[in-house]
Figure 1: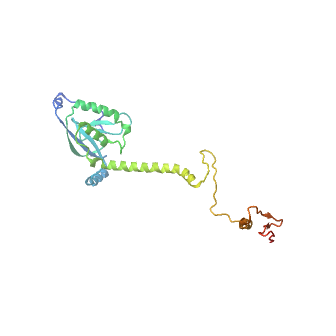
Figure 2: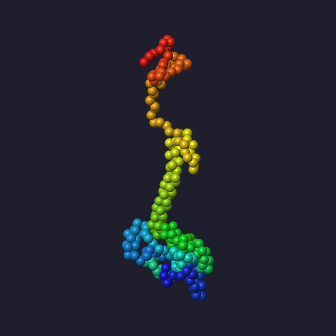
Figure 3: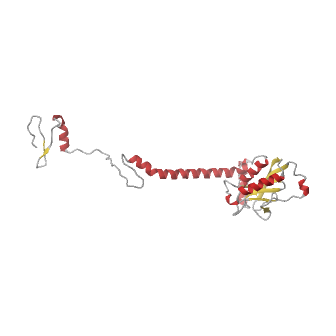
Length: 247
């Protein structure tokens, strides 16, 4: 916004007041963002595809209204039609006529000035196009052309998708340790902030010793059968007929 743009409602002469009761034409003035030749070339390429990087403003009652980023105060400003500094005028779209009186429109703009703060400007989610769309709605005329907002809408959707994926990644990252613990631990008590006790389950069965194998074979000879180790390290196994087997 340059010297031609001000953040105040324009004044009208008494002659202008004679026309205020009549329906007033509403025009959407569209600019290529900035003064860069690269943006102009880009918009010429994207325009047939229904997209582009644009600045826009609503012209009504002899002034042009738009929204920009400011460190303090409202982001709403007005200027002479089609001469907004900092952008290159591209084209205008007639949006119809409004029956709203200029006094009522001025009251609406005062309320919007308080809601559309300059520090809240966001190039994708809260920019001049969103502001103009609300102004057009207040004037009860045609809606914003889709090709003016398609590029910003697509970029905002991609950004939202990226943020959503990042939140899911963080959520999964925080839940993964608990998920792993619940999967690998069997019968262990997991307590937050305390040492965890984990029961280790062997992956392969333990090989039985020769004594245990012999004892298993003798299970059929009576529940009272016992194995008595000898001093030499061999087991004494009672025979079924009462004699002993010596190794």
